[in-house]
Image (cartoon, rainbow, N blue to C red; front, side, top):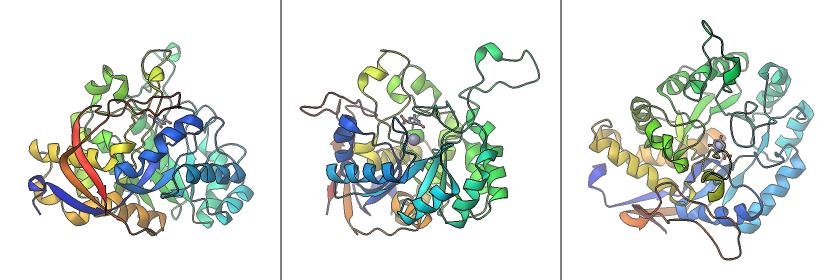
Length: 367
Ligand code: DOR
Ligand code: ZN
């Protein structure tokens, strides 16, 4: 296959291993866009307000999502929180909950009740390892408040070095719990990719669609490209593109599609972090790979059908040890789709501006 010559490509429906579907009106708006993006199975993040910290809450949340869009499989997660005990982990496993998401306190949207010290959770991680559950890491260290910056010696943490500064924690957790399945979510730097590769097969990474095309300059002036972790350098972006096509199972799609009402992006207060990609999830990745080949940073021969099938679904499903129960296929057509200017629906009071609004992209047809 010569990837850039293709106008049409058939793929198994995708598994998106990192989505934010929210609740209330926002979930009514965004959940129906999962299939539009070519996806039929998702791993749902638990950072609602309040966060999803109990099995009961989690199952009720899954039922809400199923009621909105029944033709999607929802893999569910709990939010790592001081109230989570080993007992809760055993209960979660029995209830079919797949994993636990950890947010360092304060790093991103709805993370204020997150983790301050990982060691206090070692008994929980030990139980997760025993129960064969997945630990999803938001891999950033919180920024140093500017008024406490040291004058010399100590490197302050900013949103640019927050992910590299977290990588020793990944290594320590993997060394302490070598059989615990861990995902470093939304890898955004070449250093993060290396750290994942340096671990054993229990550790994988997700890569978003938007980090495959964005760099620092894109979000610096545009709130709709601002997310956590922030997009980094062109070299980091190109390393991510190459990780997609040479992944061999170590990396797979997790879009981190994160809808916010446009008011929260357009200056009511602090700009909310999150890029919304759900309705065009697979298409954005294909566009970014094509640009990578055109720029000469991705070898065209590295973009294979097996590689795309793995990145979009097979490898994520294998890591989560789930099948694709639906066995559906999608056909994508180059240039036949268009990103909407704004996602809205009659009767709903929220509006979301998607990534690359108004631009041409691949269309998705379900077979
Ligand atoms: O940009 C982000 N938005 N990063 C996250 O980790 C959370 C997400 C959200 O929930 O909006
Ligand atoms: Zn996320």
